[in-house]
Amino acid sequence: MAASFSELAISIPAEPEPIAIEPRRTALIVNDLQNAFCSKGGYLDLLGFDISRAAAVVARNRELIATAHRAGLLVIHLQNGFSPEQWEAPGPQTPIWHKSNALRFMRANPAQAGRVLTHGSWDYAFVDEVAPQPGALVIPKSRDDGFAGTALDQTLRARAIRSVVISGIATNVGVESTLRAAYHREYFAILASDATMPAGPPELQQATEFNVIRFFGWVATTSALVTAFAGPGGSSRAIS
Image 1: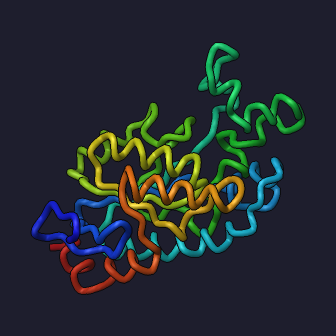
Image 2: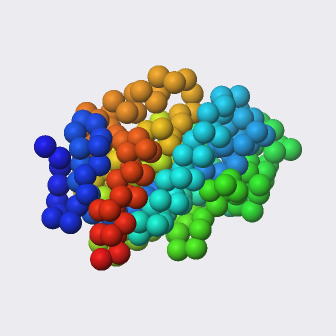
């Protein structure tokens, strides 16, 4: 039986069971589709992570974003990075100063200071193929969790959003962190599985999907989401 909270909902084929959501009360949250995480010469590539799947993930997100806009979903792009002064991580008294790979990389490679995940840099910019369209919102962040220190929760609640579809990079870091936070704030959370990619080996994708299915939400493919939102129920109810 599909999980449902509204008579206006449409059903999304998902694991562990279908979930019924109302498009006009749903947001697509696209996590960190920036050059840093998707492009050759970007932050993840410089650190030696395999980004060979990034092009396919970007392509699926482009389709998902376009369909979401047509269906009337709220589309939110999260953009991860730091100011040139790095005021978001003021020093060793903060955990992020120690654990952020980007900050550690810049400290170890002074020539890269201000070039990796830094506001205004190429690395920080969105990949051209999925640059925010008119009507989309951009929420900057400096932590993996899109809710941490941002207006994301306020933005969703002000628009009476009840469910979120989360896509982007990296599955096991920003995507999972944001999805867990959404669940704990009472949002119905759906992971767009093949529109995400982990930082690290493939089993990390499997681990996140297991966590979502068993504990935090639902997992659906891009095809299932696009079909549902593009169908008669998706587009008509979104604008009714």
